[in-house]
Amino acid sequence: MHSPFPLFVPAALRELEARGTHYLDGDAFALMARAGQAGWRCLLKHWPQALRIVVVCGPGNNGGDGYVLARHARDAGRGVRVLQIAAPATVLAQRACAEYVAAGGALEEALGDCDVIVDALFGIGLSRAVDAATAAWIDAINAHPAKVLSLDVPSGIDARSGHAAGMAILADVTVQFLARHRGLRTGMALDHCGKLELAALDLPEALWTGIAPSALAFRADALHECLPLRPRNGHKGRNGHVLCIGGDHGSGGAIVLAAQAALRSGAGLVSVATRAAHVPALLARCPEVMAHALEDGAQLPPLLERADVIAVGPGLGQGEWGRALLGAVLRSDPPRVLDADALNLLAVSNPGLRDTDIITPHPGEAARLLVCSTAEVQQDRFAAAAALQSRVGCAVVLKGAGSIVAAHGLPPAVIGAGNPGMGVGGMGDVLTGVIAALRGQGFAAPAAATIGALLHAAAGDAAALDDGERGLLPSDLLPWLRRLANPMRR
Image (cartoon, rainbow, N blue to C red; front, side, top):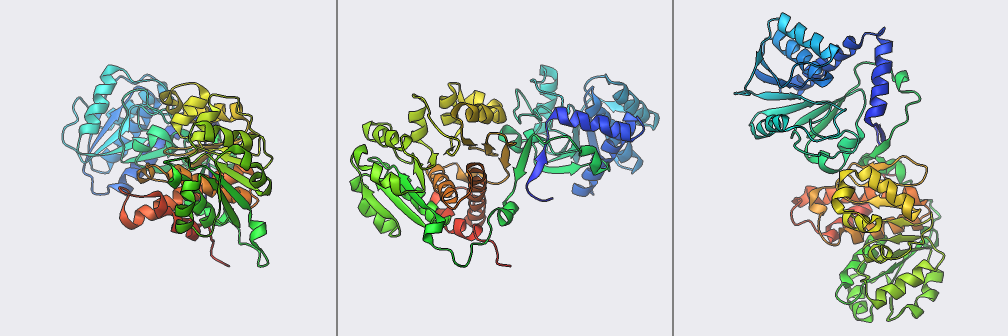
């Protein structure tokens, strides 16, 4: 699998199902048979020694896939029990259930002891909370010590958004059928899917023609293609002059992190405009920067004129000093990367941004900009990112588990890197510096946002690999930014 790779929503998958059925001479059950067999193969791959298998089947075609899997497991001599939470409600599921029973399979009513539980309750069509009876089954499965394989989607997760409106299965492995599901790459879904696998059901690639992906997933292996080698005759002027603005009283470390990240991500020059009290510590920590002590916004315009890109927000504060500096930035010409308090200040005024700018909100900041709750943002991160991009008119990096980059006219990008250890103050300041550095090196706003978010997340993963996630610091990413931003010379 190469990165980036396409992700699809349920409507596209339904179209793929229809095309697959047509390819199989209109035999929809043949497609179900392939799905059930693929699920069985996935189970064997991960738990070849499993002898006791419980398949929990729902009323729809996902349940039908489960009956087919159960028949294969029984034919292979495994101890199989099928729990039917509701009678099959589709023609295909009824046929699959009948064939399982005709082969000698029984329908039972309790989980009991087992090695693997197969979740075949609900597939890609579920977008609501499950009912109380199903929630009780899900709770029992999640509490059971057996491993869990989910067919297509962990039941309870919305395959479009990644949100769970109620209870949802906690799977160890999820095997997706036909194509990769957009919703399983961000938000709550990341805690429910376990290891993601794909079974394309042996259909020809031509069937995907004309079905546009709803998002693109980027993994760390894309960095080698995204970050080309620099020309041998390059110089600092060609690598961008980044001006980092922020660091009000008590928040000087934020702008230091942003500046260091910009340098480690390849900026040719980095200037910092901050409070005078922070300049000595800044230069002691990072002598490569050009430090400027600013006590009011009137001193900023000459610095803005010399910059290629502006990073504003880390430690900016929401007081008079921060408002004055942001006002000067918004009146300036260079492209801008805005984060933290710059976004909080924008939330109470007209954003006035351009398509050359980039904002990097976390869900709380996004909620303030959209005038909604953080919970509403998290319920559909794709919709929130799109709404935010439409409102501010520039590229958006909606941070969080499975960060999403939204830009006008492009499918959203989902960042398939990062870890929980990065949930600590200062990580966003590093991201601001990374993206600003890439913007200064000539990347267009959508590319700088996507590559920057990926580089930042991959650096976090590399740093966590050394000493673990808990206790990971933003400064731990700095050496990894440099290493990952430099592809091997060929």
